[in-house]
Image 1 (cartoon, helix red, strand yellow):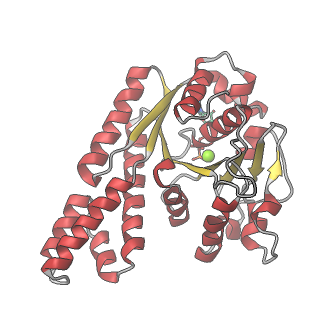
Image 2: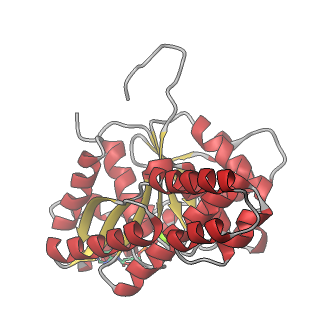
Length: 308
Ligand SMILES: Nc1ncnc2c1ncn2[C@@H]1O[C@H](COP(=O)(O)OP(=O)(O)OP(=O)(O)O)[C@@H](O)[C@H]1O
Ligand SMILES: [Mg+2]
């Protein structure tokens, strides 16, 4: 939105919307946030990175012929720009998801890395990446690339909080694995469920000298602290219920992973959300008067994307 320096575009702010569990409302949140931020004047690109089962197009009521598959599997030089499509919403563009066919759902490491390299170069103010459920390595790497802008969408249900915790642990362990690229560290990671257990097994290991052990433990704690995911509680009946769910996740993450999540806000459960999904019009547009729409506006404001 701001003209920082003529000729030199600022890198976009990247947000990844994940959370581990399926059906908690990741895509609903990503789509409505994208529309809200775009209509406040920022140039937004929404990326449907649910490689197995994309549905952003259905929620936006659009259909495109070129999609993420064409970027992942084409050897042409066109790059990601070639698959970014305009939408009927001003300032909002879309990278439509894959077809979900076998190859598209499982891009190889190199294809995924090309996407990770291309995203920060897109000419936009904000990029919102809608992730798939589960903790597939591609999903974890896209989540990690956004640094402190990884958003975990949870619901007040215990199973959702548990899955978000597991997703976070998988993301942290992936981050540690990538940092060291060492088979010894990788082997110890696989044997432990908490960061405390992992640092203790490093201390007890005969694979490292005393100096290396101290350094590795310090680095691991720093890697954990640098992961500051934001938490959104969806489908809450009230603010209190949302707060409790966010607190439970925070406590587990601090205790077992040394990660301090940042509460970002909550969205009310509202039956009109499902009507909006079926109509292909985001609820923030079709039902602006609802409390759930005000929640999206609040979160956009909290992130600094308010109306000028
Ligand atoms: N705040 C809400 N109130 C009521 N229903 C909701 C709300 N948010 C989402 N839903 C319902 O939950 C359904 C699933 O939402 P959505 O597709 O966004 O979940 P998801 O986490 O992206 O799922 P997946 O893991 O399959 O990608 C929606 O179709 C909608 O009907
Ligand atoms: Mg989804």
